[in-house]
Length: 228
Image (tube, rainbow, N blue to C red; front, side):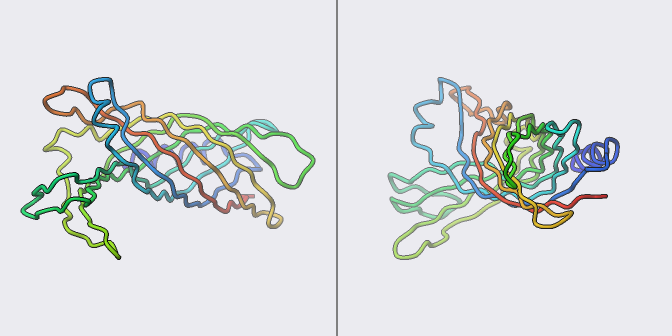
């Protein structure tokens, strides 16, 4: 699956390349949390966001002066956290009240976005982006930590995604805003803020028979280079 996403990105980059095509690298930081149906709403109110990091490459392929295709390939994560309100045992470790348990799933993603440039007379060019993102879960991990003066790691274990019947394939809707500015003749700096809403619900929670998915946001920056 990871090779398929890479092949898709390469096809879009070189199959539709024009004289103004550019490729960039970027990083972003944000937050992720669970979204669910009505049956799980009471539980999701007790869940907290976790911090996430995203790193990737992106291409900008102009179609017109103000409309571009924005395929990409990135590594990101999704998940949630919950505070321990009473002492519990996790993996043979007794967790104290106040500890936090974080669940995180790592993904390889291929965003397939469109970009609409907003015309201005400024050297800073704002734009909006929107489109789907196709992903594949590569791994999962659950970890617990307690915080006093410093945060102490209490427990960490990988999650067998196949054993819990976690759906590795993921589809999300992405929307955001950004701006870029020229650093040189063939180099640009860009900043972006994105919101991502998972259309897939990869995990079916036992007993209550309700599925959960993810939503989140991130803010990041990168540098792009004109190919010719």
